[in-house]
Image 1 (cartoon, helix red, strand yellow):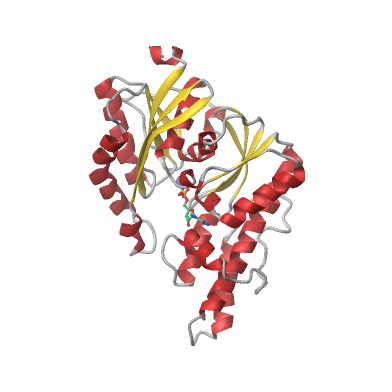
Image 2: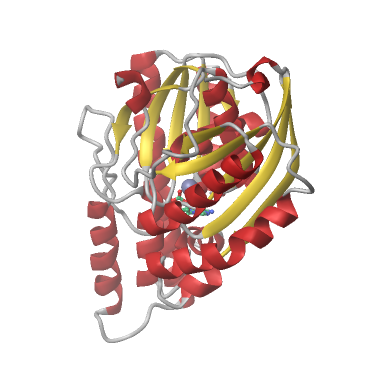
Length: 351
Ligand code: KG4
Ligand code: ZN
């Protein structure tokens, strides 16, 4: 049953995100077309997981549990929000469970409507935090630590995956290559930082899926090629020099970004979108941001890229995605909203 909130034009949405290693909440006010971020709190667990070189699900859940109340109190002055939006998948099950349980409890306690949000839809909607005039159909290039997808969005809350990675996600490849280069976790920012001093053409690396006509990605072959490249350079009896390290990082980054751009180019030719959007943690990458802008300029296609502040996981993007899901008629129940660690964009179209 819909509540009276649906009739309100202006809505305040509490967005809750705990799918991975950030405990994040935001309050976003949407008034007609205007999106105003009232608060946006991200409590990162990077320091905890960095010592293990990646996210440890049990530790993530424990930290979410320890931090969630504090994050809520910092994000919300009071309970005057009209809707609770919470990531219920995809992600780490123990981590998702903390956010969803908290959200359900608040929905029950304060009698608020609740919607479960697909984390990847959240990333897509990070683009609404900076502009709201996106033309449909929109092509989305989603590049994160867990996913690499090309998604056609025909309308609000209507998604179709048209291409995806067959193995590692691009962010995961950045993280794994960073580990090979003895750089800290997470690897994406570390690689892009040292790549600035490297020669992107120093080493030839194979562009993944170049010969495949489809729209899928693959990053495990590129990752292995980097491993063999490093072994070749060092003969396995010394460390890489700083300049070799920078050259490997820059060469890997160039090929990883080229692969994203060339599949996006094919997708545009086939699907003729009216706008192009980038999102996900990897959308913080400077080279990728520059290349996607060039592609848009070349094809005369409007381009949307989230502010750096909203490229990583945050509650504001979940709030906006929740708002548009709710406006499209989605509403869950506090008593039954479940997590789905393998949630897939577009499942709402098949129902
Ligand atoms: O979206 P996100 O915060 O979490 C997931 O939903 O997975 O993405 C995290 C990923 C990590 O793999 C991280 O290394 C990558 O985004 N990343 C970057 C950059 N900043 C973060 N990759 C490349 N260049 C960056 N500047
Ligand atoms: Zn994410």
